[in-house]
Length: 482
Ligand code: SAH
Ligand code: SF4
Ligand code: F3S
Figure 1 (cartoon, rainbow, N blue to C red):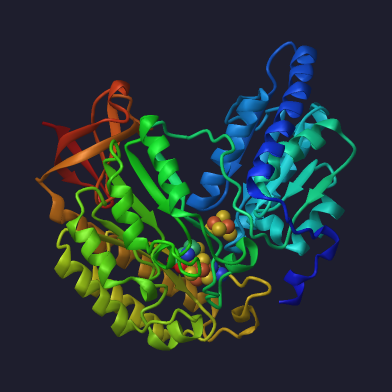
Figure 2: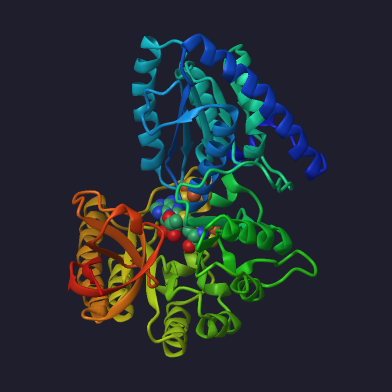
């Protein structure tokens, strides 16, 4: 872990009361807005900003916070990376996420040569890695600003300082206790929203870098969470997704705080919210109380993302997941008998160090047994600083990729079978957007998270409709409004 701990040069920890910090950042935002207005005068138009999200739902939620601040500062938001300011909100969970960022930075550099006023900022999980900071300092000196996950709320101040100019600005902290509330947020969808309920992770699965780049587990106060959900409902949001790396351990370590099932019960009371989702549930902490709260709820969606990672108890032990194959299957059984129409999805890693061909067979048989609605499959990617990165692999690259392909095929086949249970049924659908390929169709989501495409128009976005599920296309349906 030495490589990850060693970045004292960039280290800072905060000791400011959080409300005071919000006020301070609001002042900084005003100062930044003055500089943006000057820039607009010079350009004869509003400067544009583009935020690109590379990671998970939490990363996406952070991007919404950045966009809220940028909009208030006076930027016009765009998806075009030719923008005057581009921010990459990075992910480092697997190496290919990092490679994508480095690859695309080359393009940004070419654009900046043509438009020297262009500003480039990098933030997110990758920037928490000292080796990445060093690489950017040495080889990507055209980047203007680097900041991490712990001081995202300081973005107004960093934006202000970056606009003042003066070379690459780096502000990355190795940890924080602070949860700063009440800065502007711009939601990607007007009718649905993520809500952070906790930050960080304490599980230290042996392959995973998240605890190192997101820090220790901290729960937001349930009062703040409920206040945010109420505000969202008042603003037209009908679906919330409660976000955390391990939502089932919400409230642990905060004395007198609600447990996760208790929090769900409270969120259920918020008028105007029709659907509640949450991510991610760690199987080891999923309580019977949660199962009964889900069963009795009218609003909690009939979908659970329950990452299994492997079907072999031996591998699970090495992964430090703290459940066995049997315990996982028993949990699935209890969930399904309590909530028969529950859709299950999962994450699986292939090629974990020490995983044998026999272990992989166990994963395949578990997938056959559980019949997920969908599974996200990943080839193991060693992450510097995590214990597993030091361990040797048992399988060759060829064996891993062959096993991965078999798993992918099996997932497609079992998912199609599982999703076919819905064929011919009439289900409630929340319309999310126009279909990307066919402008006569809208795309919506079932409570069980399956997508449905059916004839409609833009006025339907954000509303619920009863839709007959006519044709199963594997992971999604073609439907018809009734
Ligand atoms: N907190 C969530 C997972 C967050 S990361 C949970 O515990 O379920 C999302 C997924 O990325 C993980 O479920 C895992 O399947 C995958 N992942 C994490 N680290 C990885 C690595 N080093 N190589 C390959 N996949 C990885
Ligand atoms: Fe990573 Fe495990 Fe934490 Fe999920 S629970 S973020 S896989 S350490
Ligand atoms: Fe990636 Fe960070 Fe999420 S590493 S998966 S963006 S918590």
